[in-house]
Length: 153
Image (tube, rainbow, N blue to C red; front, side, top):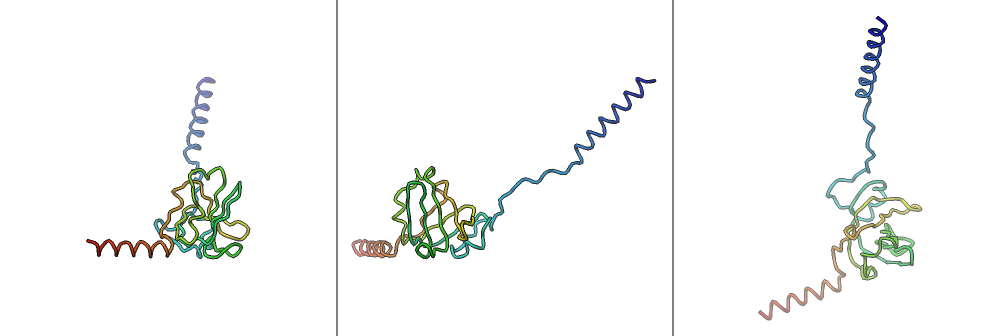
């Protein structure tokens, strides 16, 4: 009789433990808030996107490089820039000729963060930066070359 009672108690406890484990709610996975997928935002809107993943489009106003960090400023020169893309030295190997971005329109993708009251995205891979438009001068040169090649045909 004692064995039956002990066995019944063990089965009851096992059943309660099993039920308790299946009834526990799942812990929510931490997700980075996302902006609308595929939508591109002007760099002037960056401050409204803090904490979200976004693609920002803007004109590079300046590039400042040091041994440890590179700042790519947008729309207005530092300290009045509306947005900054930041590249730390440990990730800078695949980025070259960044100073040639000045005056070009580029897209920057990543998580928008606040740094001392200014929005920024930290660049970790080269595919986060895409040149959208060359400088106006180069575009005019290309247009002129295209027209010349048409007249030569």
